[in-house]
Length: 503
Image (cartoon, rainbow, N blue to C red):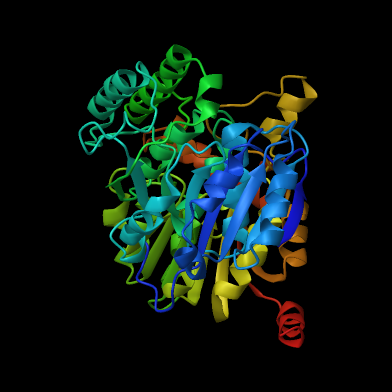
């Protein structure tokens, strides 16, 4: 048995397992000292050997929830129990985030969510995990509505049953799903599926459950339902049914609108497609020119967006795995394999299945990451010996951004160097320093000019003169006139030696 304390600021279908999957039961508990023992007792002792860990996440309870959990762990040595106590109340969704992150970091395979107030049915654990163990789904929802009348014997309040049915019908209509219950808190998740979505961006309250389903649906994860018994927990009473329904309906409608370009603030970021920068001297033109000098290779395209650049790579004979946060229309047809992942949290699991990679392309990616050095450190192990890394970033020291700052007009734009989605800015010097510190040796660097094709669509004499002048000044002083920097790198011998020595 273990106890940990969380800091106050914590923010494809599962394959068949050769060995039994590592199973985590996550019990979210708040002021549940009276009900938690019953929840733990209802876990069948015959099921104990299949459980890798039971995590009780005590959400800063005012009662003795933590002590009750610790005592139960002492008395039940066969149950591998970990108690987590949040230093401050993080909420129902916030506590799930803590447990999900623990499961991901510990390399577990399946996570089953239970509630400390008894609102789920541990008796149904075997049925819940069966679809994930067999590889038939990524998520299983315990549904009280699949069998007529099953929701009522467990103590569901009279208005909760029809309210749940109406809300689920509305959400099915908007989302195009056919689920009997979208608001069950009894769930089994593939941990690999959780790692592929940005769940930490969700609400910390009860809306978390619908928001994570929207993210899973958007990521193309398979969801099945399992009929379960109903137990109504006391935690639900703290939430106004009408207020909750209004909030989750808003989330569903925002998601629907974001997919159609009507809203930009959905809980699931639908994203925009970044076009191919194929103008004369554009960064993608440079990337493709360099790739033409490499025999057909295995390429990892990080931040592939809609796959336009990857499509050109494949046209050159390369085999391309694309990774992006957004599953944009057409991207899966333009790459050989597509993986949904938030690169701000690092490389997703499973990339080794296609590796090692001869070429890794991070075109216009690093400026979107809060910790680009973490991604660069994770890239090295997936590269083949003698592999190539190609990176492009905008130049914050370009005359345009310098002038904006000098005039006190600094603000974000929809596109370009000051794109509103950029969180890191680079000069040539800071980029080279970052790559060197991350264990890469820069073989060549090229500065690109302004994207004049956006401003001058013609091919007349004036357009040609503007391009020639831009090329000339970029060549004379790239740090001032270079719009982007493109680097070709290899793993430095120093980094390789250090890695070999450390095993």
